[in-house]
View (spheres, rainbow, N blue to C red):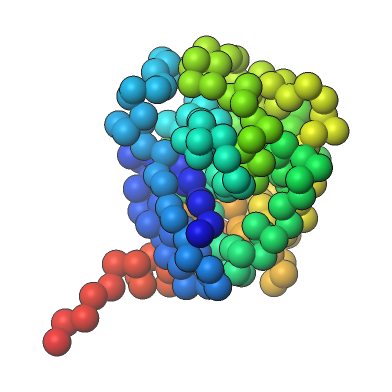
Amino acid sequence: MLDVYVGYDRDEIVAYHALCQSIIERSSRPVRFTPMALSALGPWFERERLPQQSTEFAFSRFLTPFLSGYSGWSLFMDCDMLVRADIAELFALADDRYAVMVCKHDYTPKTDVKFLHNAQTRYAKKNWSSVMLFNNARCGALTPQYVSTASGLELHQFKWLADEEEIGSLPLEWNWLVGEYPHSPDALNVHFTLGGPYFNDYADSDYADEWRGAYDRAMSARQD
């Protein structure tokens, strides 16, 4: 069973379902989805939303190891993504030498504003935490208390690890940043980080038609 935790935001509900559909259609192994919905995390997580926070799951994502019982490997993904390959291939990259594995982007955002007029913040390791393959047993520092009180930079810059050598690298194709990187037919998971095709301002983004196809299939039902 592949455990996939997906960010859930009430402003982007359609994104969650389209992403899950894209994973289901291509996965060669059973997948168990957990939506990181704040309404379900109340017993373990409570913190006020910050002005610079663009999604409801900006911090709760780091509860993934706790919710996994600090056992095995689990994947966290932002909801504004579309998987174009077998997610089992991503899990196959899990390497026990590391506590967490990410796509190590090295870029400066092109815009100052993104979806829903949110400010485009700039910081080291930008977007590293949008896809995280957790070696849960080695992420014991991510307790509910720590995740509820640590600063954004402490969490997103992986200050909870003893050493940066504990961060393994995943191919960038597993977190291809739409609008920041050029269109690539080899992208395995595309990330609509500036804004998904479900927002009018980003309806013509690269891979938008593929996303709409996944959404339509997720919403389909036989009529006979």
